[in-house]
Image (tube, rainbow, N blue to C red):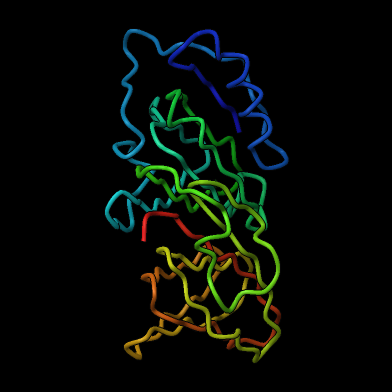
Length: 235
């Protein structure tokens, strides 16, 4: 994967390049930052056609980013905090690696992304246009053991693995959450009204509203790995 990047403030160009290098799956490369040309179209991230908005909840957006082999995004500007769940790079699965960037709130960032292939590049992303929250532990969910894999003023993420037939403990979140399956398998995600979402592949996801308990069950014959991501906001 090639990353062509330009920051809104030229003094941050080098920092942007370092960020691009540190936040790409293994196997990607980054080229020196370059400015969009006079004929290049620059759009907000929510208008970039490969960053598809799948769910809207107030100031929060769930994006399914898919770049086909040989394709390239438009130059697009990040203007909000964002958390990434990496599903696959052009060279293969990314095992649901999690990262986030909250600096975009203060310093917008414009770049262009190309996928050299041979496979699909895909990310499930959360953007949070709301204000930063306070103390980290005040709004943690119940029913999830251990420390979050990622936690900051805008986001929180947990990772769980379920054995065949295993069901998670009931969990209740104070924030909107999304369950993302990051391995092959078959899982069911319950809902308080009795409706169940079925996740059938790496990259499948289910959105869940705050204060509504749910469970996740591995319906398959192999262990399945999932990440549970929150976009933090005022309760």
